[in-house]
Length: 322
Ligand code: NAP
Ligand code: GDD
Image (cartoon, rainbow, N blue to C red; front, side, top):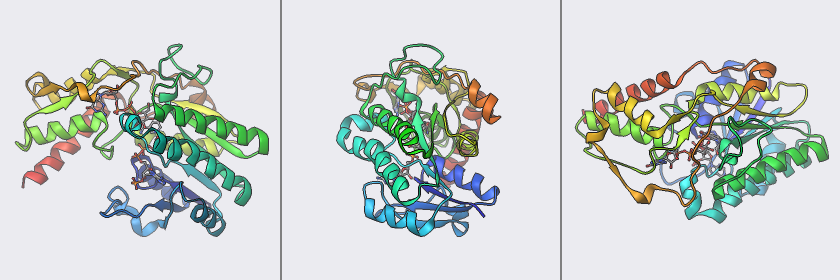
């Protein structure tokens, strides 16, 4: 039985990747952080089948012990301070966790588990102020936030450890992917949560920032299949994972509100504090190499994604209202 270790198992992607690997017959291990309140809500439904360990990308000793104890065949580094806006308020912390955290883990893989295959969660945010459209694996990076700078550092550290030490280390450059399990401060979930709550009479207004930004939005459940597929390749490599369609925040907003029979213009306020010091205006990915080499393709399109997220949050708000 193959063993996988997932950092960030409590996050959106960690939960879908765990389900996927369990279905494939893996023994799935993951790191969790001690918190003052419960933080395993996304994996509670499978928790009896998982092996959870306290661990933190800042804590090299604990992570080293974990690698030596678990001896994973595959390591998925999903842990990060993953919020772009927050990274402007906590740039050094974000650089430490999201950037240096990956390097710390790579160094541990090199010394404690050199045969393990390593996946690094890269981001389309690295393309930032895009230098070409669509963005592909050869598009130069132009990061626009401390988060994106940290991800660029993690990306090149992964490439360097692959080339310098022969590690089977791959970068997935994933474009935005969402789900009913998405964190509630990311724009898609913030919108669908508000739609559910407004419809149920629990909330009146929704404050948003820039509505004209364009994102290539996919479904997280589709994207974790690509992470696994990358580590099954004979040779490690880097892949862009994206739907190949781009939509504005306003289009997401319009679709979600209209799914619930509401008009967004009657409920949404503009709040300048939600703007970023530097914005990423347009993301649109070219994932053809992943489709050809990994045999990967997304099953959900934009409308399905918005509708499923909105439906789930309508049900959640109805339960809250009861
Ligand atoms: P997420 O929901 O924010 O989950 C982040 C995970 O990292 C959580 O489990 C969190 O634990 C953990 N974490 C944070 N700081 C940590 C630390 N110091 N040590 C150990 N664990 C730590 O993010 P996601 O959407 O699942 O994304 C997964 C990864 O893909 C992230 O690296 C993200 O930057 C990257 N990514 C995401 C997208 C996207 O659209 N979702 C696109 C491209 C790349 P707690 O639960 O304890 O906070
Ligand atoms: N979060 C948020 N909240 N974003 C808003 C809001 C708001 O109230 N109003 C407008 N936006 C705009 C942001 O300015 C941005 O242009 C867009 O909505 C998307 O913001 P987020 O949902 O926060 O995602 P992101 O694109 O910045 O980052 C996500 O995707 C990256 C991949 O490209 C995160 O998941 C990153 O971790 C990931 O790497």
